[in-house]
Each structure stands twice: as C-alpha cells, then as structure tokens.
Image (cartoon, rainbow over all chains, first blue to last red; front, side, top):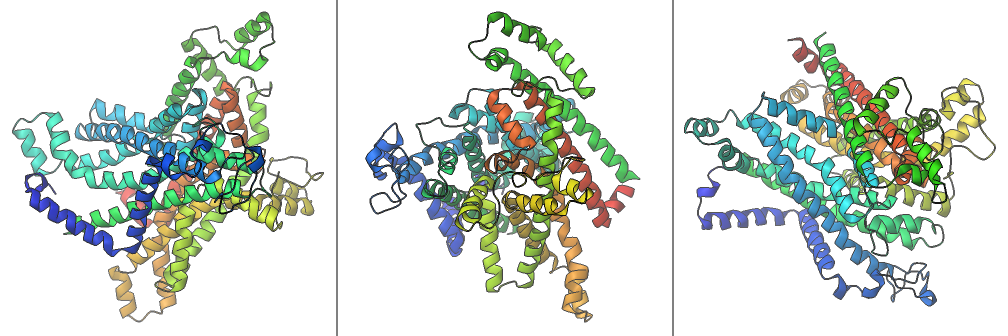
Length: 295
Length: 339
C-alpha cells in the first residue's frame, strides 16, 4: 500500500481497471453501483425528472387529492393533491445532502482526532480525546442526535449538526486502533528518527495506510446516516415542510393509513432502496479492499 | 477475579462519561435561545407568573450554579419538575420506564432467539435456495429503519389482515394493579392470566418491529462467523475423526460462533432503546421513549436530561451484562484476564 504514491500513473489506472473488473464480477455490486448512480442523478436532475416539479413546494390541487397510484401519478397523490412520486424524487436531495455533509465533516475530524490520540498514545492528549469519545458514546447515537436536534431549532442544518456531533466518535475509535498498531511500524519509527514532525507522520505516513478501512466504513455508513436522518425527520426534526423529506412523508402518511396506503408505502420503499444501494456498494468495497490487502 | 476488576473499571469510566454527557446536555439546553418558562405557561400568562416559575426552576441563576443544583438533586433521585406534565419527572419516569423496559426486553429476546436461529439455519443450508432466501431477508432487515417496519407492520397486520392489536398496551377496560409496572409480569404475579395474554398480544407487533433490525444483523453475524469457524483446524480434525455432522455443528461450531453475535448485543440493546423512541409513538405505547420525544419537542429540559441519564444508565448496565455473558461463553477471555 505504502508504495502507492511512488507508483506511476499507469500503475494506478491498471489498478483501477483490475478493481473495476473484480467489482463487475459480483452481480450485487453492480446492482448497488447502478442504484447509487441512479439515485444521485435523480437527486441532481430532480426538476427535470419529476413529472410535477412544482409539487415539491406549496401546491394545492384539491381536485386531484388522494388519488391512488395510476399511470398519471405513479405513487398516487397526497391530501393536498401533490404527486407523491415527484415529492420522493425531490426528497432525495436533502437525504443525500445530509449523508454527504455529515460524513464529510465527521470523517476527517474523527479520523484526525483518532490518529492524534493514537500517535500520542498514553499521553494527556490521548486520555482527553479517548474520554471525549466515551462521553459521546455513553448513550445510543440516535438518542443523542434527537436531543441535540430538538434543543436547537428544528431545520435541516441543525439535524446535520446533531448527527455530525454523534458520528465522528466512531471514526476516532477506528483511526485510534489503527494508529496504535502503526506506531510500531518501521517506517513510522524511521520517520521519527529522521526528525519528521508529528503532523507529517500522522498525515503523510499513517493516514494513507488507514484510508481503505475508513473509506469502506464511509460507504457503509452512508446508509446508516440516511436512516438516522429519516428517523429525525420522522419526528419533525429535519427539513421543514413544504420541502419534502422521506421521514416526514412517512409520518404524515401514517395518519391516513388504512385507506391511503400509498402515502407511507412508497416513501418507505424509497428509504429501503437508497440504503440497500449504498450497503451493496459498501459491501463490495469491503470485499475489494480485503482481497487487495491479502495480495 | 481479574475480569471482575476489568468490569468495575469500565463501569466507573462509563459513569464518568455519563456525568460528562450530562454537563454537555445541560449546557446545551441552557444556552439555546427561547425561554422554557414562557413556553410552558403559554403566551397569555402574566409576566409575574413567568418570573415566578423561572425563579422556581432557578433559571435566573448562573449555569454553573444550575448544574450543581441539578446534579445534587439527581443524586438524591429527584430530576426536578417536568414543564410538560407539570409533575415531578421522577414520578413520570416511574410510570413510563417499565413500559419501555417490557417492550425492549421482549424485542431483545425475539431478536436473539430468531436472529441466531436464522443464522444457524442459513449456515446449515449453505448454498441452497433457503440460504439465498434468508440472506435476502436479512439484507432487507438491515436496510429498513425500524420505524418503517413499525408503519408497514401496522398497515399489514393491523389493518389489511387484522390479526394483532396495534394500539396501546392492553385492550380498553383491561388492566392490572401495578407491582413492577410491566403489565405481563404483574398480571402473572396477580394470577390474572387473561390480562397477561392480552398484554402479551399487544406487545408482539411493536416488539417485532423493534427487533427486526437487530435480528437481521445477528443472523448475518452468526452465519458469517459459523462459516469462518467451519474452516478452522479443529473442525477439520473432528470431521476427520469421524464425528457426526450434527455433533460437530451443535457441540463444537455453534458455541464459538455465537460470541461475535453476543458481543454486539450491548450496542443492539442501545439501538433498541433509541428506535423505541419512534416505534413507541407509532404504536401509541405509553413508554419512556415516547415521553422522551414529546419532552424533546416541548423543550422540557428536565425531562430530556432525565431520559438521557436513564437511557445512559441502562446502557451501562447492558454493557456489564454483555461483558459477563461473553466471559461465560468464551473461556479465552477468562484466561486472558487471569494472566
């Protein structure tokens, strides 16, 4: 792994080709890969894909209210007469944004904290960071996220903040464990002897060797963050109406449940498909990295 | 008794972490904008009434003093006044906690029994359609949030094929004089079996919805660790010695393979409590978690802090319990600790 950065570009493309070959051998990986791409594209191009783009906002169309699924309205319409399918497509935006923002803040932060604590193992910094992670792991993450989001003003930003606060600790733990073992490696020792600063050792020597497990965890976590975000918006602590969010759609739809089943079932299916796609992709990444390490 | 010392030390650190968490939650709850006293009394209350409530809640004092006051009364078992119910939070918790415990315990039992059973079944039928089918089911179980299961179960088994009750803890008019607060236990203790059956039937749907995630996870973990272990040398040796497949499977393969499943149990119990926050509101289950969500939305700070402390405390107990359980199942841990 450590030879990577000295390898030529051709070496890298070869590697990517080999990785792609192995990925494409597994049918489930392909399903996950295509699923993620379709979801991301649908979110980006929502205004062009959704049959009724204006229905993502404050539209009232009582004539078409409460229609069951049909060719005109694939997933039916809600009590306001809005097309459920269009609203689901627009809801993908905040859902994906949530996952991306949460992970892109919590992963670098958590990893850095973990590496610093692991590099200075046994020092005051180590015990401070370790105790800090313990505090955040003292209650289940969803409960902490719910209470932080509830104490702040309910909106998408604060929901992201609440989940980020609970999420970095897992990466700190993961990076800590790896840093502790890497401390004993010769290349870390020799860098120390040569007088390299701790910043150099942590970011240039240790980090590249921790990347593959961290990236794998990230893809698998994307689904879990999305599930947590849906849980928050289910309680009303996320994207505020009229902007659609999958969790809110399910909790609103549940009120009309026995008769207007399409209001809950389709957003529920959407969550399942999104999380499934990211999990399949994450699983195949994991297989990919673990076989690479064996070679 | 090294293992004992290890557990004591861990518990102590968890308690320290819990105190740290309470400081964070407390500070957060006091620095957020908005006046809890005004919110509790509503916009039409007089300024004097709001002022009186503020001084009663010590909201006019510095945060440090408030925290000190709060933590000393918590240690005496007093969580202060709930602004939502206008009762003592401790009394509220005494009513709501048993309902959640009952739900979480039944869910934990369901997920352990069925999760490990499905994992074993998938291993035994490895490579067949049964295995394939179970793996798909487990995958669906992992990717579906439990509140989605709750809503879908309610739709299917409550309305489409109404075979199970969907709301509340018992049918209307049935009840039992509380002893522990867990209706099934209480009614058995009092010998009132029809109520016990009724309460148990009411438990099934919410508990199963809650258990689905963990069940799928356990099935996956059990299957993969059994398959890993089945390539170990000692299993190969036992096969070579001519032990029957059944004997190897249940006597030598199963026990080491459930260890990874058991060690994730503490985390899973935490997840059950967390997901109960949503599942309870869907099934109108009058438990601690539903109370917690309502308190959060109402910004009832004393109640929120209390619920977090209680859940954190239960989480610590669950961790100790699982540590001991793993030590019982896995002799390697006992040996390592004894070194």
